[in-house]
Image 1 (cartoon, helix red, strand yellow):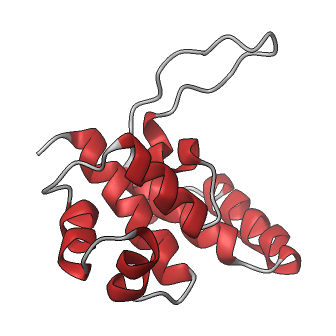
Image 2 (image 1 turned 180 degrees about the vertical axis):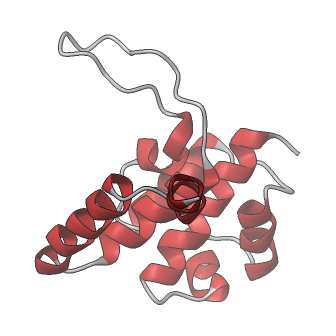
Length: 129
């Protein structure tokens, strides 16, 4: 299995679940079986370009979104920037963060900022000895 295929499949699964769709519903909408959707989501089978487009349309996302961490961030002049290495934890954090209501996002950012500002327990214990 290829890392990109796995990432794309994971993004399909995350978005499908966020929209409350079953594999059968998504498969029916794009003309494949639920088993085929399962194979796409696990990265077992690659998704053709035309099928990927149909899936993105059905999931109401840009095709590029399905590539997640493998996308190259754009520069201000439209040229692609350097490739970004995938980080599964960051991917999950972003997915969950995007599902929060706007009012809760600031609270999460403040919380994470506070966590970064406070030394870890092992650092505190080392200083107290």
